[in-house]
Image (cartoon, rainbow, N blue to C red):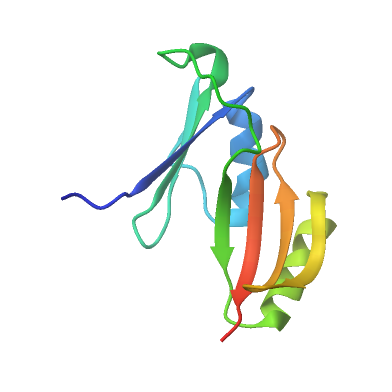
Length: 122
C-alpha cells in the first residue's frame, strides 16, 4: 500500500496561499500560479493549494474542518512558533494551552484552514 505523501487544500487564491505559507514552511513553492500552488518539503511531503472554484468534482467541505499539524520537540519551540506566527500576522484561533495530549496552539490560514502546532505530553 502506498503511504500518503500529499496534502491538498482548496483555497480562494493559490498565489496568496503560497505567499502566506512560504515563511511558515520555510520553503519556496515549486509551483505558483493563479489556479494552483505547491510546496515540496524536505521529507518529501507535498502541500498543494488548488483554486476552490476550479476543483472537480466540486468541493463540499468547508475550511476549518481538518487541520494541518506541525510537531515540535519542546514546549519552548511551540512558544517560539507562536511568537513567530503572530509576528507575521497569522490569525490565532487558540493561544498556547496545555490540553490532554500536550501543549498546543492553533492558527488560521487566509481561507480559515486550521494550523495546529503541538508538543505531545510524554
